[in-house]
Amino acid sequence: MGHPPRIPVWLQWDQRVIYFITFCVADRAKVLDNEQTFQAFKAAVSKLRGWSVIAAILMPDHVHLLAAPNEDREAKVGDLVGALKRWIRQALNAHWEWQPGSFDRLLRREESAQEKWLYVEENPVRAGLVSRSQDWPYRIGFNE
Image (cartoon, rainbow, N blue to C red; front, side):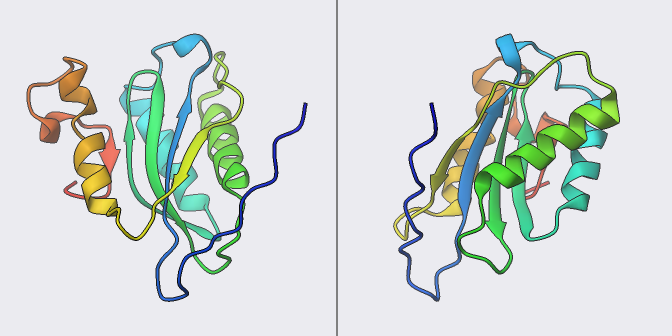
């Protein structure tokens, strides 16, 4: 079964296109919250051409990120996610798999990337992993 066609980006030309993206490890295996995986993630982000990762957080079993296409407003989120997933697994010679696909949401004018990030960065606190969000080491971007 194929995916439905993507709705075109209907934002004003002066508004930056930013996506909130989440992708998960298969069976929600808790394999991402370690320094080796974080380094593999940062290396994967540095390889990206055509996308900028504004902020990201690695939770034990999933990744949240805010990303923006550099020039092509219609760039495919699936290509971004697929590349990150592939490069991370290759760098780690991982024995675990990713869940197929990802969740993405185009942020609209009334939404702020900073506000979205403030909510997301509290995930480790809500999960009981740290008492303060700034203590979670596996994040890049806003308020590093």
